[in-house]
Image (cartoon, rainbow, N blue to C red; front, side):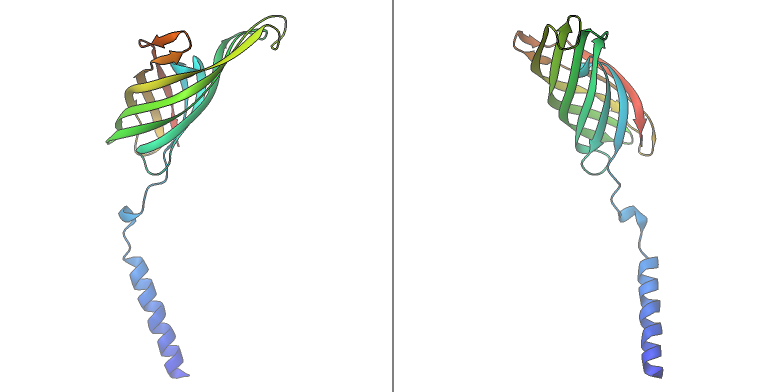
Amino acid sequence: MKRLLLLFVLTASIHTTVTAQRDNSDLPLPPAKNIYGEIGGPGILSINYDQRFKGQKGLGFRVGAGGIGFLTSGVFAIPVGLNYLSGSNGHYFELGAGASALTVTDGEDFFENSSSTVFGYFNFGYRYQPEKNGFTGRVFVSPLITGAGVFPFYGGISFGFKF
């Protein structure tokens, strides 16, 4: 019985010592998540959610909803896309691509005289995203690829919060 108790105490103390020596800097950071408002870009005037697949930079995605207009006429957009962040210390170069579903309405109600289309876009720009939670900002060029052609000189800005 004494040997069993001694073995238990030794095992518990070794486990405690090993876990106490673990360095938190080796643990991967959780994926960066952002909510931001965007003026310009593929959502025209939109609210968006952006997240890295892992860590603070690298590959991630965005999805949003936006547009401009009034209750019975206007433009409604849903941009989705993939993006990649490269950089460090909160300063990143952003490169991305995606598609935006667009519905244009002009009538008595939302479904009257409406037409829908999808266009592609690219994003090239600068993103400030702190390593911890806080204010984020972006400025970018976003060429659009539509059925009417390519519009290379389109872009936007965004402001939001990383959590």
